Image (cartoon, rainbow, N blue to C red):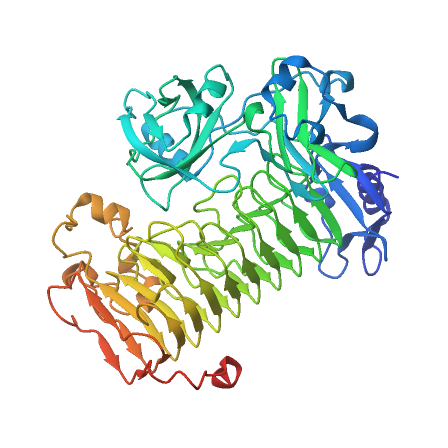
Length: 619
């Protein structure tokens, strides 16, 4: 019985007999189920609170649902014999490269690689159309392979900006890079080359197709970088057969349909994912649990829950999707628990639920998951967890190994509690492991009992990184009882906001300060003023701050009569710091602006023979 047949059986059973006591359990036996069309669950597939429906791997077995076709390295791939391809591939690695003729398997449409990265979000604002969908992903031994690139693991730098391009005219930019001259000769005739970089800011990446490269090394993109381009910024080039020279790289010749791959080992399965939809797509579904399943290989999201209630994803492994692992929208009381989520192109779990109009809670909970090695395609603003709406929770998750954010939140009354976060912000500057910004009606959010550690600045670090970053004057966040350890930057950044509290935290070996407060709203050079744009961007123009239920937030109703650009009423109290600097107040015309800063303990850095034990301190 297939999964679709099981769905139909349950629908028929419910229609004829109703719900059995205790509900239904559908077991999937061990094996790989190739999904060529999204598995759709709708309202008629729902269970009841006392009679839920569970879809699970059979006990002791592993069912894999993949949005791709499975090939064998040993049986389906062959040595490279095409002389033109051989002339392009580095002769030192040619014996390691194998190929697959997709035409032999009826795959004849190859699409085009999309524009990716956070910088593409600005295209919509400019009315620029661009490709968004990935036609294929390649997965070998459970690892998403990389399109052949140079440099293999690092970046080169922009040495000269030839042309900034134009967002108005949608004309591409031109740059020269720190690239050896012998590379240009190999790339000049490449007709499917791309480049991915941090073109202006170290918190915004963008990948675009290359329209041309000349023998002097000038590379021109098809699309612009809306933020601009600067010298010394980082980028790499990719999708070049000429650069297929490292294990786990691949290239698809769209002219011939031949796929070239350099596997880490010449054995095992290769999944070529081409599903342009979620593997599992749930709409208006209730009281269903997906358990002990492996979801992999979508060119979109892994699992989507839209307008769902009490749907649980538990003990699942969700990996190798081009977009997000789990996307939950407009839903309530949904749970993602005890899952491993990794190798996802643009984030782990994205959640929206609850009402910003009434501040009714979504009560969606993301808990006890291990989320790592994410943000492969869109490196910035594609976090492990994003909380949106009102009253959702991220707790007790372990998050690590990412170029940018761990947790991003918008909205009100969310809880971020008990998470361990490390080795994130690895390619970023002016960013936070936990981050939110701008809207001054976003309040009541709580960041508590988290352990954030081992954050190192690897980008240009002009401004630095932060464990918790309340950016662009965001207000009303509680940051308490966290441990921040071994941080290259500041523990907490309050960038012009008010009514935030930072209390009872422990900082150990934080290179800059326990808290940095700025008055960005009134600082010279930033240009903020209380005008129509400010009121719109901060949601104060809506008037929602004047009435219930928003009246529960301190100082909000009267904010426009109370110097709204100043960082007032922050509380920095009872924090304990070792080998960490004191509070930094910068960009402020007035020293404290009605902030309470009291009873913080700064242990001298000269005490080097006694290293505090984090566990004992937190107890």
